[in-house]
Length: 261
Length: 261
DNA sequence: GCACCGAATTTAAGCGGATAAATATGATTA
DNA sequence: TAATCATATTTATCCGCTTAAATTCGGTGC
Image (cartoon, rainbow over all chains, first blue to last red; front, side, top):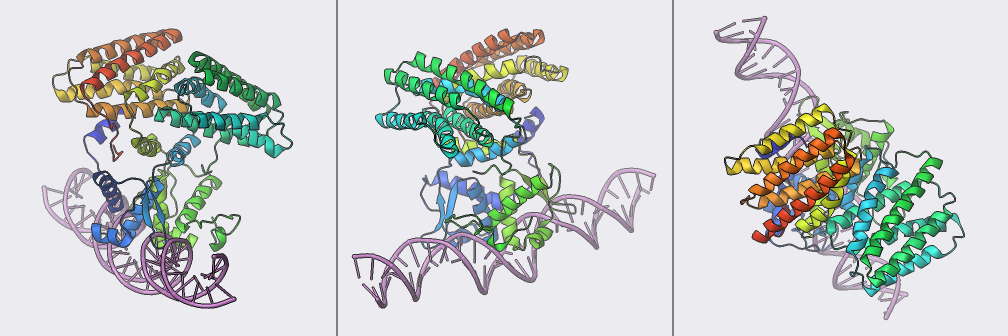
């Protein structure tokens, strides 16, 4: 962000006239906070909105489309249908970011440079925050990964599950920004891994399971130092495996153009 | 680009029928990659798109709106107007993320937990990557912050400039994900700081300038270890100031509801 | 010549009403 | 009772037209 641009946007030298549909979007957003609307609440329906704002149907519909794309509302047809407020989901928040990064040709190194510092930070932040339900799910996950895979599909499922372990930790993280970033990195990594043939990365899986098991034990003891040490080592190890993988397959262009899952 | 009516019934056992406008969005995305379109290239204009797809104007317009919201195109009127492909901007990528985090009640601690690990990482990653132009802009920035502020407006400008220092470093970062995340954190922080009255944070500004100056010197020497050490200390120091600030003003709800800048 | 103004042109923006599709609800029937 | 159908409600899509904005270009005055 260049300073000149900053100066411009700050001084309200907005040259472009705002489109009416964008005005509606702004108004609706204001209305949401003014009326203390919650996710699940319904917006006035199309006809009412048209009367309320005094704009035409097409314009209101464009505005609703914009809100829908932003993930703020979801729209249903039929009786009792209409636009319902939604909690902006992780997926909605990360899609544009993926589009943005799509043009920047990522590779494993970029992702692991961040994972190496963020995952240990995340790991420590959930020490003492795990409920019995969390432990149950995490242990089930590890059990799934311990089984001997009989076919290629099972192997891929296991590789996905290994990432899911980290996503579960992220869900327990009290810092929403850190949580989002780790989940996002996991998603990037998954797209990357999916494209690579699961060659013989047996020992990789075994190493992962081993780290995950040790991490769980450390969580039980609430041993923050050990959690940090283990996760840091786990990341360094995982990055090495990734490099090995990348050496075998010269895959660049990790992200899907459509950015859809 | 050849959409047909049965596009939805094709491979999808999806219960929900996709809206036509979303079909168009998908088709356009595919068309972009298939035709190797670049930012700056023009899409067929409205009328042509209507004929091409065989859908009505409103539907096509909704699709264009969706693409516009996603930051993929910008639309102009007048001769030679129409939808132009755009590079997805940082702002477009971060807006939904800000919407997402808006409901999660962030505070300074959440942001600094990340800044403390990410900024040093970023700082080191740009060692040896700074051009003379970079140095010039960075030094101009430090000079601006060194001046004695004469009024409240200037003081705010300086506080903004202090953040801009970090944004400039982020722009030089070779890792796009790391770069984005640091810029995003800066933006979050700015919204936070803007809302707080710039009380007497004179010594805060002085400490910042001092760190920035030392960092520049270390960059000149390409002393990576010192850069890391300085930036880490800078972040710890800045967090302390932030806590002080937050103690004075009990400000929660940091993010603007509109999420617009 | 040159700057300025304004009409013509091109293109998106906005309008409103008609018809189709989806879905929840209540009525009907086996 | 359970499955099915009818119907009412609400969004989805279509159409053709009017309005507004941005650009081009020719003319006018200096």
